Length: 256
Ligand SMILES: C[S@@+](CC[C@H](N)C(=O)[O-])C[C@H]1O[C@@H](n2cnc3c(N)ncnc32)[C@H](O)[C@@H]1O
Image 1 (cartoon, rainbow, N blue to C red):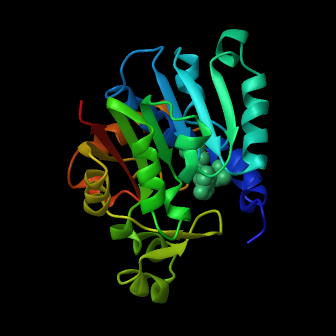
Image 2: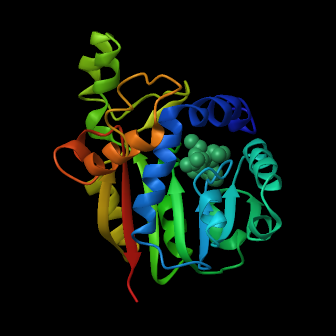
């Protein structure tokens, strides 16, 4: 692996995935789900593996105090550029820290945050345990842990819809896949991560899907992303739809 593995993926992720209707829907759905659990601003939010800040910058705009920890200098450079385009009051509320999320507590000097996000990161790690433990060490008593992970239970859907039938068949027994950015990704389950959180004294309080309809279809650029997001929000919160999402959003809380 190159030193900054994300240097190669940054363009595809920041300018590609997030620039699409689907990318905007993902941000919006996760944001709305999160707001149901977060205390009001200006609570302190730590975004571990926060990348270019797509999920935490909207929180900074609402007045949250945001710290992004990421191991990729390239992704943090993207975050810095995006933050620089914000008004002064938003810029003042964002801090960028380079380093491994597994050491987020050390990198933030043992500070405890009202919420710790870890979205779209575990899927790139062979073993989720050190990262989940670090995330949980950073949360304040009564605070929120928000994890978005690849759903190991739905790995057959994408190859099947792409007509890759041999891959789809193999995916029923697989725990990983080559992800949409072309990098290997590993799936988790809601039950597995719920257990892992519990082992770190964090109790799951809700889980959601993120996308369903927009993920499995190609949406034209002029699609009304807000209208799609309203549909996805409903689907993401109820069975059986949420269980079919390619990714899931698990929210936990550290006991008081
Ligand atoms: C798919 S991006 C997600 C970015 C952001 N969380 C979001 O939802 O937009 C994955 C990010 O995780 C970061 N990352 C991967 N492994 C990491 C690690 N061990 N420690 C810190 N960051 C990591 C990458 O550099 C990249 O910015």
